[in-house]
Length: 163
Length: 220
Image (cartoon, rainbow over all chains, first blue to last red; front, side, top):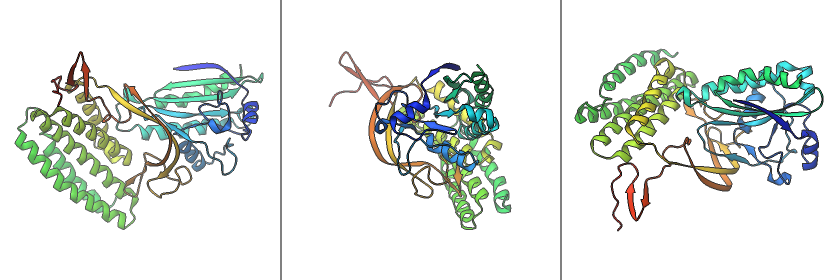
């Protein structure tokens, strides 16, 4: 299942909250849109795993946290894999589109192994992507489905970016 | 693959095939109990070879042995489930089935050898047994806000080291050890991560029943 909707101005919101302003790919907290303050921000429990995977694959992200600062994580102990919200700036899409493909493939490959030993019908991943259109709008792409479907997301992201 | 592990694999397949034939409801309980004993003894051999591989720092072989160890655990638990059902202990049987499912998953995550040995097929069978043998369950799932969690492999804060949850490292699975919780909520869910956390009994119109057997539970 794919759903595309409007999203708030990520840079403006990061500034309001006193977070680092993302210049590259970034992982946004779950409640980034609605949080009243930085102290309330919560990451998904899968955020540290994605960070390690990216680090191991040479993908540099902009952490929203200041150095030595940590946001707590929410763990729902659900059967599905709930991934973090990934912010992909327009500049990255135009200058280094392959990085987006690599970043998502790394997650998809990890999930292939993560879901081993679970019946195929029960394998479900959720991921949210925030990207910018060429006209400067922010869009949210919500994915919910089998983990191998993540490999098709770069194409969707490009389409939304070109809107 | 290490030669010792390779030759051990043949013995492993033989033992598993031999015990697998008792993984059916109609088989005699005494044979199932015997198979549990046999597998439990055999598991010690697997664990000992795993330790040996850890000692010589052969990570691939150590993870192979971890995978085999979990496949044995899965079969032991499946056999125990059949025995518990025959003994009219469905709640215990449920726990054994969930243990078996968890062990197959761990085996499959630990090393691809489990996939070669049809762990995916085994996982499907256990999933079907869950649906066919037991009534639909009502599960509880905790939602936690975690402030600190450490890595089970190296003890560093999870995310700061290079280990990843769900992967095997030198014969051990990596998981998060939660050390500081900020908040906790419990909700009722259909598909939980932990199927052991379920409703055991309910009360309706003054009658309390066991959710699994539907039997009345008398108030003490």
